[in-house]
Length: 128
Length: 174
Image 1 (cartoon, rainbow over the protein chains, first blue to last red):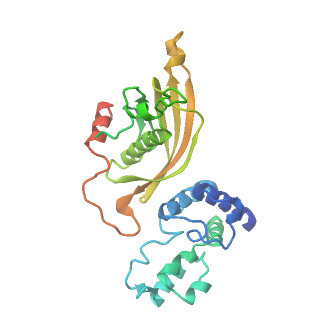
Image 2 (image 1 turned 120 degrees about the vertical axis):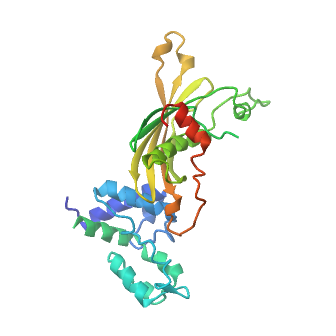
């Protein structure tokens, strides 16, 4: 199955509308899942399950939304992600854009990495 | 206090589906208040939709727990959708049909369909009563020992209590 980026976006949008109960016009490419769309922790699992079904792909735990990174003291110190932590995040999230996050690195800002665009890019990479 | 809103497990297919039965009776006190007589209308006993959802959550929760031999503490985390097409009244028998959609180490998702057999419509031919489609429900469950924030919970499985295991045993599934 070969889908254009726009087609992937439209399907991701439907997934997010169903999983989060948000309106069509709220799901923009730059919207953050937690800040703008109100996703909570269980919603991330819901989103992963729905993406697997919608695109017929397998998403191992932690691949789309990395776990156990922010709990590691080597990766977070004084409330900020360390250089080592940044390397790990970038390696595990090649689908995310870290440009804005680089300037602050506060763990409160990590949620801003998880945008609709990051999900679209992740799915596109999975589909090859 | 018994907070189990299903009477019997009728079918249980590991990691696939579970069907539970609940008979709605006027002996249930909540029906006396939902809805009580007022100056404007007589008493109208209706099974609260929230308790129908609870029954489905318990049915699907058993399905999710059974899929991993009740090693996980299965907590209802989210009702993604609950659409009701009609109400449930005393004298009707509810069928909760839960289907497992996805399960992994973190949790599971399930879909549920609620039907009733309306015995009040079956006087002429009691065995031919039709099932009415009551509701469609989507649910998410968390395996809370696998939570990402690293919180720890007691070792014993406080979700699947003796009451749940008795229900399974009495239904012939444990």
